[in-house]
Image (tube, rainbow, N blue to C red; front, side, top):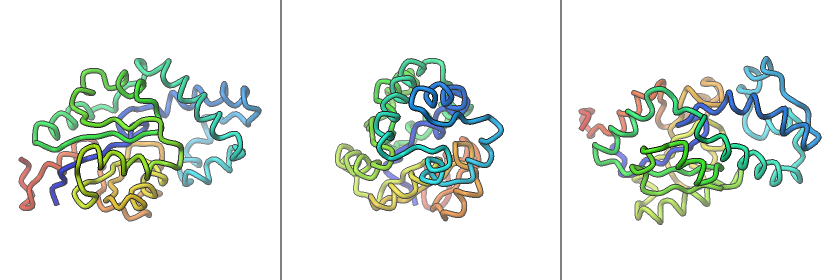
Length: 214
């Protein structure tokens, strides 16, 4: 189907923030008394769902709110230095030009998102930032209300298992990308309705039912 509204996750989906996270995590770990990650651990961690990742690195639930706030603040300070994935700006621009309405729902702050997107932010009709780590379903419902689009006409596109969970809770279709935080085979096992191997494949969302790109 041709969706009226495409809602994107931000980190990992639109911006290539994994290198930033790998560099920042040891600093935050020292601050919160957690185990620092080694870069060579990342391939194995990418095979885990979001809750398994937190257990693997030893994050107790009571530390999670403060940890999230700290990472959000550090991301805001670094936002202008974290690049979009190659091809994302072109894909988002073409979706907008095709008449698809666009939104973002993310745990990141709205300020970080706007700064990271630069001029591309003007194409986004709703930026729902600041969602809790596992609270994106509510943020997705708010985005639908803000854009006046029913769940059946929208899709949420993300790169982690928690994105798939949030979409299901909010009644949206879920589309997974192969270039984000979670490993592609983990996401494929979640049976997403749409699967995108590279940013250019997002243009399928602008196709009419016959498959012709508008």
